[in-house]
Image: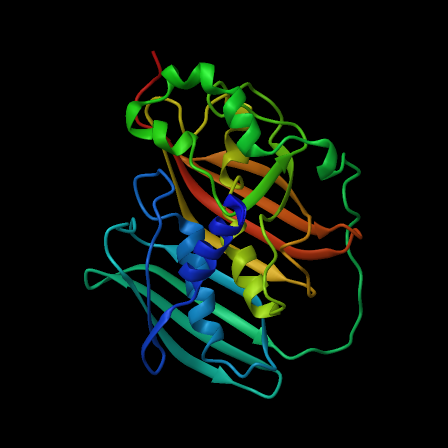
Length: 296
């Protein structure tokens, strides 16, 4: 009998399997992860799938740059419109607009590249405990249940919501009772069940997963979280670069930091390594971290 993890992963794959409406026009559905609007990683992952389906399979995505323009409505379908900007001999470029209720909610440029040989260097992977030694986010949430009464009632469902990605923080951070710490964290992640052997799909799933935990890093020095009273958080933009092939159903280390925050915006960066210590992707995001009212 398939496990709950298999069901969650299959549901994610179903979300990413967009319906083709016309040439370069696709439709996707949303899942409620307990927030007030569509999870940004879902929109970015679906936009990546839409762009990929219009490109020759010899080309793989190597970067994406996206802007979150409006909150997504979880009760409505999202239409993805793809513009063919360029098809070259070694690079291809696509622009994707995610549309709801006649207005764009997300806009992305994605670049694709054929495989080439070239110079290689990278930063070293941090020396941290392995995932087998660590508790998952799902397990940690059960341990935090005694702090649930501090969370606004409208967000309590989000605390217990499980997702298709197994995430294991090296140094757990209790988002229901946050402490102040340096603006850095390391989280192991992988899909909770095996995925098809399709590199383009693995890149779409990592696009989805790369939006988890990242912006929260910019809150660490301030001892607040998404669940703190009056806190308003939202991704503003998201950039992702893929450096080599990888398997997102095997453990990847997401090493994140936040160089600074100002004007109600936080900047966060991430490097993603495989178990062999190879750098597979890099991420940068700026997001809204607005305190609308002071905690009592």
